Image 1 (cartoon, rainbow, N blue to C red):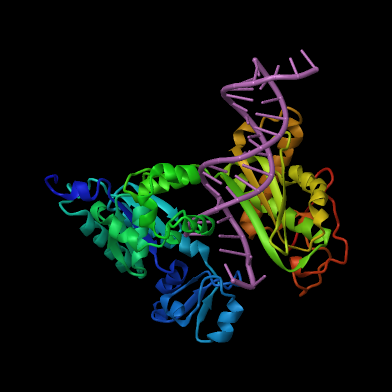
Image 2: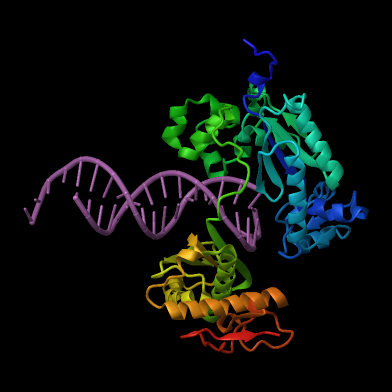
Amino acid sequence: MKSRNGEELEYPWAIVHVDGDGFFASCEVARDPSLRGKPVVVGAERGIATAMTYEAKALGITRGMPIAKVRRLFPEVIIFAGDYAWYTEVSRAMNRIIFRYTPEVEPYSIDESFADITGFQIPKKTTYEAMARAMKRDLQKELGMTFSVGLAPTKTLAKVASKHDKPDGCVFIPLPRAKEFLAVTPIEKVWGIGRRTSVKLKEEGVSTALRFIDRPEKWVASRLSKPYVELWKELRGEMVHPAHAGVRGKQQSFMHTRTFTPPTSDRKVLSRELTRHLESVLKSAREDGVAPRLLSFFVKTQTFKYRSTTIKPLHPTNLPSELLPFIETQLDPLLDSGGPYRATGVIIHDLIPESSVASDLFAPTAHERLAKVYERVDALNERYGASVVHLAASRPGQRKRGAAPGPMRNGKKKPKNHTRGMPFFQAER
DNA sequence: TCTGGGGTCCTAGGACCC
DNA sequence: TCTGGGGTCCTAGGACCC
């Protein structure tokens, strides 16, 4: 029972997944074509390799490898610090190209997008597979890098497709052929099945994606949570998650965190780090026009254990000086394990529009005055570069010129603490 | 894998209410 | 005071993603 053009049964929906190969490294090559064919690695700013060209991969460089090790073992490798503004530009260009084929473009991450081309083969007088091929060709020609493209009836299957022949692949999974592909897809390679769940599934004899979809729905539902049942359906070709175009909903949370070496138990260092994170995360909130109802922060021990706490201020606010006292008072209970600690972080969530905060019933004038102060601070920082002005509590105390900045320091001298009452701002330059 | 940074979504269980 | 049963809201934490 085949429909007239045959394609309806093969692709009840036609979802394309586009994935930039070694994206950050490829962006560097695209900007400087003389790098073509050479091993290029990005990640100098973090100290670990975050992206690499296939020439670098061929040498044996993997994601997460320390940059120092890369330098030592492979002196011929060209290493870059990530230029995320540039990568974002390339990413936008990528989506504009995809948008020529369908308005239903869903950017998933900086280097990946989904596109729903269902139905467009008719007005364009072509086939889905030809459209996917053309999309890939345009992307590569115009952006100067390769892409792995997958076409299938669901997002999850399209991910299987694009991964199947990386790099520079173009793989089609019409529904009748899904089982062939799933038979050779190890369960841990499936999008949404991580280390924990793949171990669990393997214990029950589910080692491939095919074995997974061959289990009854009830079997899955009784062992795993809702997202896995949805995954099961998507792998069977049933659309659960449409590729939705347009504006993604507002961000749900903002986080800022940093690891420092060596680990420390110095309360002053931890407090200063947290203050910086708080400022940075609230700056993002102000840029987005939101204020958090919840503030969490954590310290991470040497053994990667997290100690965290969540605070609910009386009223939501995105002004650092109003939240800083919470961190100061809640930090000590977190440190009872003694440390040392290798990282701290601040997360804000339950974000609400800033406009609904402005009418602060309790202290309208004080809050509004403070909000004005921060407006000026943000403007100054915008004009003169990142964080020229910030809370004094986040300054390294009495740092000597040339001394290791921030957390590297031992923090012998007391940083001045003027955080009680009104904030104390200080210019660094 | 001697392990970076920024996100999303879901669930279990307790508190509280009727 | 003891007894149920059911609903909602909130929070901590798990698992996963790029």
